[in-house]
Length: 63
Image 1 (cartoon, rainbow, N blue to C red):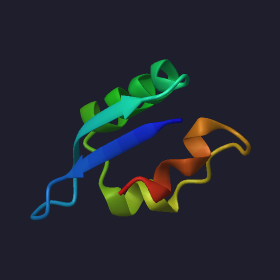
Image 2 (image 1 turned 90 degrees about the vertical axis):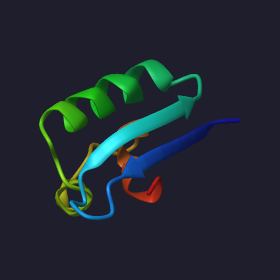
Image 3 (image 1 turned 45 degrees about the vertical axis):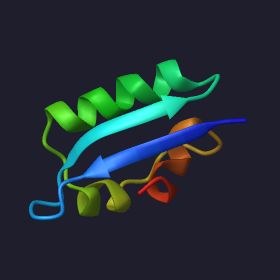
């Protein structure tokens, strides 16, 4: 079982936080850290094509 939550600033649309409880958390935390530090918006993330099947391919379903 896995649980992930992504926090998006409503005014700016930027990803500002994430909480992940999963066997793949190490991979997702690294990716979320990169996205937060690069100030990537949720709209821009949803336009990205992630490799499938990977845990990153489910990011669009988390927010």
